[in-house]
Length: 139
Image (cartoon, rainbow, N blue to C red; front, side, top):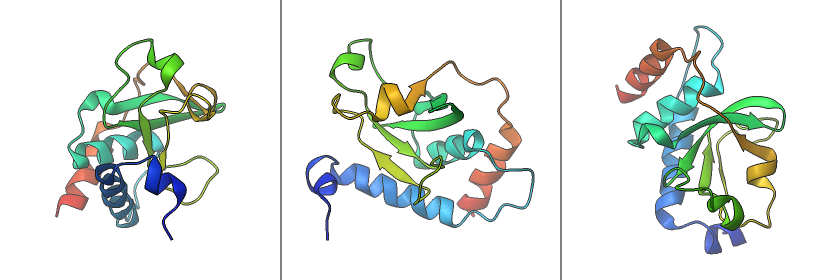
């Protein structure tokens, strides 16, 4: 069955993006250092061809977290009142399935601004891990 959200909130291109992201994450076989959401998010974003500014670092609740704005990042402060872009979360905190599409456009839902809280860009990104993930998946 198609959910209400799938039928009314998310356009088919976003559903397609979600499916590609799920496939990417499902096929990752990682044996290196601990794989963090910060690197996985950037690798998926790059693989999907999203602009680098679609990556958002911040918090999910009180946990450090990173996610992707889809189809693009917030454009101005007004979005805080009328709704944020949607979120593609490829490493959900405390939820399954691991890869989820989250509605951001509806300001009456608490996802963005309460659960997902944007912050400044991280400075500790392990770019070699991002590169490895993209290479592994591109083969």
